[in-house]
Amino acid sequence: MKPGIHPAYGPVVFRDASTGSQFLTRSTATSAETVEWEDGNVYPLIVVEVSSDSHPFWTGSQRLVDSAGRVEKFNRKYGRG
Image 1: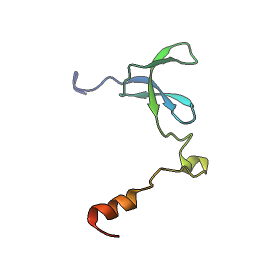
Image 2: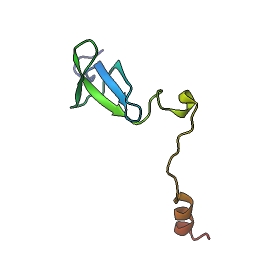
Image 3: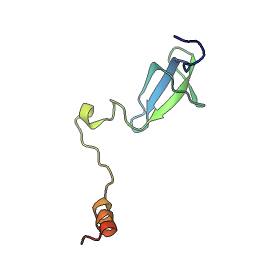
């Protein structure tokens, strides 16, 4: 690899916002937030909305997404109904 053109690749903790579960992996993503991991080291923390711990495909439960008003907005915008 060419030196100086690639982002830093290191350990990062990802936390699911809805379940609070965390996992340690490597990524080029960075964050000003940090968290102390189980091994006593401090790592950058990235908070994600959905992970395999809360995704409906993996959990088997349906998650409601607020989509009310989209059809009405479309109809108002394009003059239908």
